[in-house]
Amino acid sequence: MTAPHFGKEFDELPTHTHVPAVSSARRVGVALALALGAALVAAACADTPASNDDASTIVRSTTNVAGAGVVGNNRPTTGVCPATAPVDPAGAEGAVRSVGSSEGVVQVPADPMRIVVLDSASVDATCALGVWERVVGASTLDPDFRGDGDQALYLGTGIAEIPSVGVVGSPDVDAIAALNPDLIIGADSLGSKTYASLTDIAPTVLTGSDAGWKSTFLQAAAALGRGQTGFDELARFSADAQQAGRDVNATQTQASVVRFLPDSIVTDAPTSFAREVLGEVGVQRPPTQTEAANTVSTDDLSAVEGDIVYVRFDGDDGESFGTDVMGSTGWEDLGAAKDGRIFAVDDTVWSGSGIVAARAIVADVTNSLNAYVS
Image (cartoon, rainbow, N blue to C red):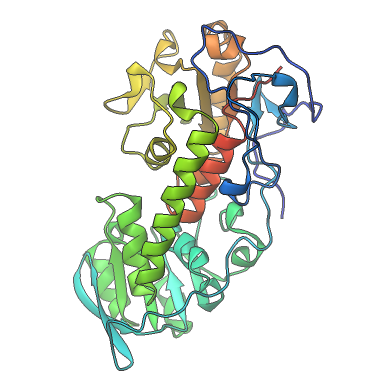
């Protein structure tokens, strides 16, 4: 498995570089907490005193795209998913249990063994709960949308080998039926017609997408017979994220989160997955990004500005447009660009959903919030 694709315009940077300390005019964190593996956020923090802003201790990104350091390109690809979580003893009625879904209450196997998952959040949940090896088929990413391949690379090598049952949003019902699943999980965006076809094959749970990523995860965990572990994992994540924020003094930094579409620039709404995770860490938002997602004109990039700017690209076309914009005078005049505080992140992770993706974002923030790109 290869590292996430960001295009062919990488310039190799030295692994360690001495750079000037950030100017006092910039509201950035001053604790220097970095991790090389990015696997466990809680273990990724250094013990540098908050009063020391010695930038020479920073481990830099090893690649660069359009002047932005690339974060997360060295994620582990093995051992990402933990051991199988214990099945919930409570709630089972013999061999079945009743769980809620967007289509009402559904009776599912108490401990499903042959699972088909039809959206990225559900794939993430099977990894987080250690039941991914029971997944006999999964919807794959649309290569035109994300460019990551069949499955998101951050979930590791094993999940990449799960047989495809069509791309996300367009499941192949015949392929699913041939796998003889005992449980199907997907998102409510599939709609009632597809749901009816799926229920003819196996008990089907469609998770709701309006209540936030944590609610979606808990719905999937309940369907997988591991609701209690789901609650426990969310509590552990929140504690780790908040500790990571304290360690890097996150509340002192306003982070802009930007996504390049094939022909436009948008900043994340406060309700986006990435923004919710950053909020849990304690990272602040720039004043221009506190209320809603915004489309930014290339003629006025002021709404992109932040103490640090995270950028991601919607597929190859988004990357092509984004690198053009990032080479413009208007972009280079941004304070974050002048200070070398713009970082490119994996769109599959930052536009995703799920607890494994959330931990990956926390690791990205830990590895970049007090870093610089020359």
